[in-house]
Length: 94
Ligand SMILES: [Zn+2]
Image (cartoon, rainbow, N blue to C red; front, side, top):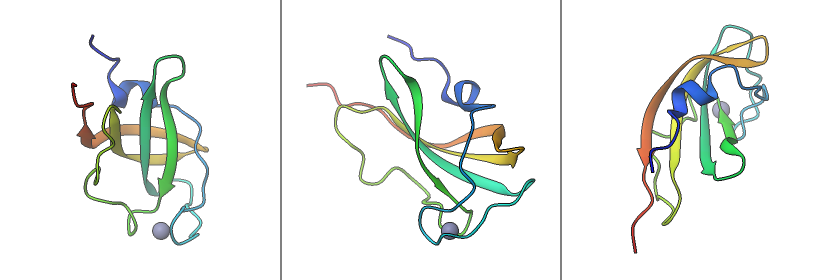
């Protein structure tokens, strides 16, 4: 099965503006990073938001059986814009 492109799916999604790691406030126009996982029913679902200082370089450790991505985007009017996939961890087949 081919999943919808996470960058396209997360473009325009609403995002919180507080870094989950350092609690820094993310300003309109700042770059932001997000961790999202795929759910069959919910599509690409945002799980964490970070400022660029706290953003991990990769999905590590990956979760077996989960399709996960780390993306970078611009935080724009409380939405993600220009989403780019930084790392992706594919589910491991049994
Ligand atoms: Zn931070």
